[in-house]
Length: 273
Image (cartoon, rainbow, N blue to C red; front, side, top):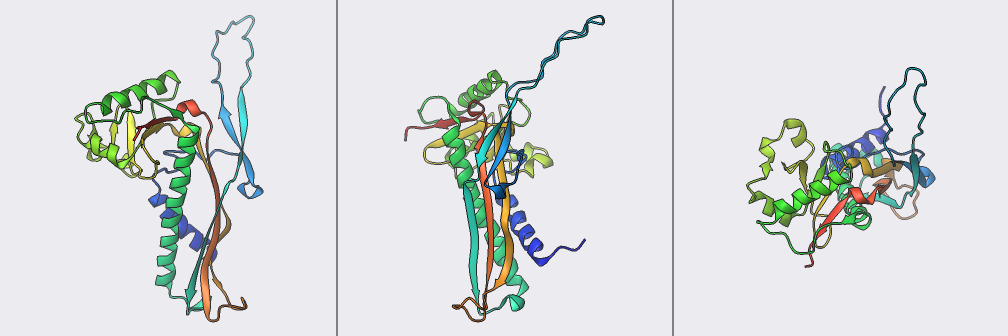
Protein backbone atom coordinates (compact mmCIF):
# COMPACT_ATOMS: atom_id res chain seq x y z
CA UNK A 1 0.00 0.00 0.00
CA UNK A 2 1.51 3.30 -1.15
CA UNK A 3 2.09 5.99 1.43
CA UNK A 4 1.06 9.59 0.88
CA UNK A 5 3.70 12.32 0.81
CA UNK A 6 2.41 13.50 4.18
CA UNK A 7 2.88 10.03 5.70
CA UNK A 8 6.39 9.79 4.25
CA UNK A 9 7.32 13.18 5.69
CA UNK A 10 6.09 12.26 9.18
CA UNK A 11 7.86 8.90 8.99
CA UNK A 12 11.14 10.60 8.04
CA UNK A 13 10.86 12.99 11.00
CA UNK A 14 10.01 10.12 13.35
CA UNK A 15 12.95 8.05 12.10
CA UNK A 16 15.37 10.87 12.85
CA UNK A 17 13.66 11.57 16.17
CA UNK A 18 13.97 7.96 17.34
CA UNK A 19 17.58 7.70 16.17
CA UNK A 20 18.48 10.87 18.11
CA UNK A 21 16.63 10.11 21.35
CA UNK A 22 18.63 8.74 24.25
CA UNK A 23 15.43 7.87 26.13
CA UNK A 24 14.06 5.51 23.53
CA UNK A 25 10.67 3.86 23.77
CA UNK A 26 10.96 0.21 24.75
CA UNK A 27 14.37 0.84 26.33
CA UNK A 28 14.06 3.75 28.79
CA UNK A 29 10.28 4.19 28.71
CA UNK A 30 7.20 2.20 27.75
CA UNK A 31 4.28 3.26 25.56
CA UNK A 32 1.45 1.53 27.41
CA UNK A 33 -1.64 3.69 27.64
CA UNK A 34 -5.32 3.69 26.72
CA UNK A 35 -7.13 6.40 24.83
CA UNK A 36 -6.24 8.95 22.18
CA UNK A 37 -3.65 11.66 22.86
CA UNK A 38 -5.65 13.95 20.58
CA UNK A 39 -8.41 13.91 23.20
CA UNK A 40 -6.06 15.74 25.54
CA UNK A 41 -5.64 12.95 28.12
CA UNK A 42 -5.05 9.20 28.31
CA UNK A 43 -5.06 6.51 31.00
CA UNK A 44 -1.82 4.76 31.93
CA UNK A 45 -2.03 1.37 33.70
CA UNK A 46 -0.12 1.10 36.97
CA UNK A 47 0.61 -2.48 38.07
CA UNK A 48 0.22 -2.07 41.83
CA UNK A 49 0.48 -5.74 42.80
CA UNK A 50 1.68 -8.98 41.26
CA UNK A 51 -0.49 -12.07 40.71
CA UNK A 52 -0.77 -14.05 43.95
CA UNK A 53 0.42 -17.68 43.95
CA UNK A 54 -1.19 -20.11 46.40
CA UNK A 55 -1.50 -23.86 47.05
CA UNK A 56 -4.05 -25.91 45.12
CA UNK A 57 -6.29 -28.49 46.86
CA UNK A 58 -7.76 -31.18 44.60
CA UNK A 59 -10.94 -31.32 46.70
CA UNK A 60 -11.56 -27.70 47.52
CA UNK A 61 -9.71 -25.91 44.74
CA UNK A 62 -8.10 -22.63 45.67
CA UNK A 63 -9.11 -19.20 46.87
CA UNK A 64 -9.83 -16.77 44.05
CA UNK A 65 -7.80 -13.57 43.99
CA UNK A 66 -8.31 -10.41 41.96
CA UNK A 67 -5.94 -8.10 40.14
CA UNK A 68 -5.09 -4.66 41.42
CA UNK A 69 -4.19 -2.55 38.41
CA UNK A 70 -5.20 1.08 38.61
CA UNK A 71 -5.26 3.64 35.82
CA UNK A 72 -3.49 6.95 36.14
CA UNK A 73 -4.95 9.84 34.13
CA UNK A 74 -2.24 11.69 32.22
CA UNK A 75 -2.82 15.06 30.60
CA UNK A 76 -1.10 15.61 27.26
CA UNK A 77 0.82 18.72 28.26
CA UNK A 78 3.21 19.18 25.34
CA UNK A 79 2.10 20.52 21.96
CA UNK A 80 5.09 21.32 19.74
CA UNK A 81 5.16 22.61 16.19
CA UNK A 82 7.47 22.49 13.22
CA UNK A 83 6.70 25.60 11.18
CA UNK A 84 9.60 26.65 8.96
CA UNK A 85 9.32 28.92 5.95
CA UNK A 86 10.92 27.82 2.68
CA UNK A 87 10.86 31.07 0.76
CA UNK A 88 11.27 31.05 -3.00
CA UNK A 89 9.57 27.69 -3.55
CA UNK A 90 5.95 26.74 -3.72
CA UNK A 91 5.09 23.31 -2.35
CA UNK A 92 5.19 21.59 -5.73
CA UNK A 93 8.68 22.82 -6.63
CA UNK A 94 10.66 22.45 -3.39
CA UNK A 95 13.76 20.34 -4.22
CA UNK A 96 13.62 16.87 -2.68
CA UNK A 97 17.05 17.25 -1.08
CA UNK A 98 15.97 20.48 0.63
CA UNK A 99 12.82 18.83 2.01
CA UNK A 100 14.82 15.85 3.24
CA UNK A 101 17.34 18.09 4.98
CA UNK A 102 14.70 20.17 6.77
CA UNK A 103 12.75 17.05 7.81
CA UNK A 104 15.97 15.57 9.20
CA UNK A 105 16.57 18.78 11.12
CA UNK A 106 12.98 18.80 12.38
CA UNK A 107 13.35 15.27 13.77
CA UNK A 108 16.62 16.20 15.46
CA UNK A 109 15.19 19.33 17.06
CA UNK A 110 12.04 17.56 18.24
CA UNK A 111 14.15 14.82 19.80
CA UNK A 112 16.18 17.33 21.81
CA UNK A 113 13.00 18.99 23.05
CA UNK A 114 11.45 15.66 24.03
CA UNK A 115 14.67 14.67 25.82
CA UNK A 116 14.55 17.81 27.95
CA UNK A 117 10.86 17.32 28.76
CA UNK A 118 11.39 13.64 29.65
CA UNK A 119 14.29 14.57 31.94
CA UNK A 120 12.13 17.17 33.66
CA UNK A 121 9.48 14.54 34.42
CA UNK A 122 12.04 12.06 35.71
CA UNK A 123 13.76 14.52 38.02
CA UNK A 124 10.50 16.06 39.24
CA UNK A 125 8.62 12.81 39.88
CA UNK A 126 11.44 10.41 40.75
CA UNK A 127 12.88 9.78 44.21
CA UNK A 128 16.00 11.52 45.53
CA UNK A 129 18.74 9.00 46.24
CA UNK A 130 21.98 9.04 48.19
CA UNK A 131 23.76 12.11 49.52
CA UNK A 132 24.44 15.37 47.72
CA UNK A 133 28.19 14.81 47.92
CA UNK A 134 29.58 14.87 44.39
CA UNK A 135 30.66 11.52 43.01
CA UNK A 136 34.35 10.80 42.51
CA UNK A 137 36.34 8.15 40.70
CA UNK A 138 36.60 6.30 44.03
CA UNK A 139 32.94 6.54 45.09
CA UNK A 140 30.96 6.18 41.87
CA UNK A 141 30.88 2.38 41.73
CA UNK A 142 29.71 2.02 45.34
CA UNK A 143 26.96 4.58 44.73
CA UNK A 144 25.65 2.71 41.69
CA UNK A 145 25.75 -0.60 43.58
CA UNK A 146 23.67 1.03 46.32
CA UNK A 147 21.15 2.16 43.67
CA UNK A 148 21.03 -1.40 42.35
CA UNK A 149 20.31 -2.68 45.86
CA UNK A 150 17.58 -0.08 46.41
CA UNK A 151 15.79 -1.05 43.19
CA UNK A 152 16.02 -4.73 44.14
CA UNK A 153 14.45 -3.97 47.51
CA UNK A 154 11.64 -2.23 45.60
CA UNK A 155 11.14 -5.40 43.49
CA UNK A 156 12.22 -3.77 40.24
CA UNK A 157 13.15 -6.51 37.73
CA UNK A 158 16.87 -6.88 37.12
CA UNK A 159 16.43 -7.30 33.36
CA UNK A 160 15.97 -3.98 31.61
CA UNK A 161 17.38 -1.67 34.29
CA UNK A 162 18.93 1.49 32.87
CA UNK A 163 21.27 4.20 34.10
CA UNK A 164 21.19 7.67 32.55
CA UNK A 165 24.45 9.47 33.32
CA UNK A 166 25.50 13.08 32.84
CA UNK A 167 28.65 13.62 30.72
CA UNK A 168 30.76 14.35 33.83
CA UNK A 169 29.52 11.13 35.44
CA UNK A 170 30.30 9.19 32.28
CA UNK A 171 33.84 10.58 32.43
CA UNK A 172 34.17 9.13 35.93
CA UNK A 173 32.85 5.78 34.75
CA UNK A 174 35.44 5.64 32.01
CA UNK A 175 38.08 5.70 34.73
CA UNK A 176 36.34 3.01 36.79
CA UNK A 177 37.81 -0.51 36.44
CA UNK A 178 34.33 -2.00 37.02
CA UNK A 179 32.87 -0.30 33.97
CA UNK A 180 32.35 -2.53 30.93
CA UNK A 181 32.70 -0.41 27.79
CA UNK A 182 30.26 -0.49 24.90
CA UNK A 183 32.62 -2.65 22.83
CA UNK A 184 31.90 -5.47 25.27
CA UNK A 185 28.14 -5.27 24.75
CA UNK A 186 26.20 -7.32 22.25
CA UNK A 187 25.26 -5.65 18.97
CA UNK A 188 21.57 -5.54 19.94
CA UNK A 189 22.36 -3.55 23.09
CA UNK A 190 24.77 -1.22 21.32
CA UNK A 191 22.02 -0.34 18.83
CA UNK A 192 19.93 1.09 21.65
CA UNK A 193 22.55 3.81 22.15
CA UNK A 194 24.07 2.20 25.25
CA UNK A 195 27.65 3.08 26.11
CA UNK A 196 28.31 0.23 28.55
CA UNK A 197 27.15 -1.72 31.59
CA UNK A 198 27.84 -1.54 35.29
CA UNK A 199 26.28 -3.28 38.34
CA UNK A 200 23.51 -4.74 36.19
CA UNK A 201 22.56 -1.41 34.57
CA UNK A 202 22.76 -0.61 30.88
CA UNK A 203 24.39 2.82 30.75
CA UNK A 204 23.34 5.74 28.53
CA UNK A 205 25.05 9.13 28.39
CA UNK A 206 22.50 11.97 28.59
CA UNK A 207 23.33 15.69 28.64
CA UNK A 208 19.74 16.79 29.35
CA UNK A 209 19.38 15.47 32.91
CA UNK A 210 19.38 18.94 34.46
CA UNK A 211 21.52 20.96 36.80
CA UNK A 212 23.55 18.94 39.32
CA UNK A 213 21.94 15.61 38.34
CA UNK A 214 24.70 13.01 38.23
CA UNK A 215 22.65 9.98 37.26
CA UNK A 216 19.13 8.58 37.14
CA UNK A 217 18.51 4.86 37.67
CA UNK A 218 15.29 3.18 36.67
CA UNK A 219 13.32 0.67 34.59
CA UNK A 220 11.00 1.17 31.58
CA UNK A 221 8.04 -0.49 33.35
CA UNK A 222 7.29 2.68 35.31
CA UNK A 223 8.15 5.48 32.90
CA UNK A 224 5.63 6.07 30.11
CA UNK A 225 5.80 8.12 26.92
CA UNK A 226 2.64 9.12 25.06
CA UNK A 227 3.05 10.73 21.63
CA UNK A 228 1.14 11.32 18.42
CA UNK A 229 1.12 13.65 15.45
CA UNK A 230 -1.81 16.01 16.00
CA UNK A 231 -1.12 17.33 12.51
CA UNK A 232 1.25 15.19 10.43
CA UNK A 233 4.22 16.92 8.82
CA UNK A 234 3.63 18.31 5.35
CA UNK A 235 5.13 20.82 2.95
CA UNK A 236 2.31 23.34 2.64
CA UNK A 237 1.94 25.98 -0.04
CA UNK A 238 1.47 29.42 1.52
CA UNK A 239 -0.32 30.76 -1.54
CA UNK A 240 -3.36 32.68 -0.41
CA UNK A 241 -1.91 33.47 2.99
CA UNK A 242 -2.02 37.17 2.26
CA UNK A 243 1.65 37.53 3.23
CA UNK A 244 3.81 35.05 1.32
CA UNK A 245 4.07 34.76 -2.46
CA UNK A 246 5.88 31.83 -4.06
CA UNK A 247 6.70 30.28 -0.69
CA UNK A 248 5.93 27.16 1.28
CA UNK A 249 6.57 25.82 4.76
CA UNK A 250 7.39 22.57 6.50
CA UNK A 251 4.63 22.31 9.10
CA UNK A 252 3.42 19.78 11.65
CA UNK A 253 2.31 19.39 15.29
CA UNK A 254 3.51 16.69 17.67
CA UNK A 255 1.69 16.18 20.99
CA UNK A 256 3.20 14.15 23.80
CA UNK A 257 3.62 13.64 27.52
CA UNK A 258 5.89 11.68 29.89
CA UNK A 259 4.83 10.13 33.18
CA UNK A 260 6.61 8.39 36.04
CA UNK A 261 3.95 6.01 37.37
CA UNK A 262 5.80 4.74 40.47
CA UNK A 263 8.26 7.30 41.90
CA UNK A 264 10.19 4.84 44.11
CA UNK A 265 11.37 2.95 40.98
CA UNK A 266 13.19 6.03 39.62
CA UNK A 267 16.25 7.09 41.65
CA UNK A 268 17.78 10.55 41.19
CA UNK A 269 21.37 11.14 42.34
CA UNK A 270 22.24 14.83 42.60
CA UNK A 271 25.23 16.76 43.87
CA UNK A 272 24.99 19.96 45.90
CA UNK A 273 26.97 21.97 43.34
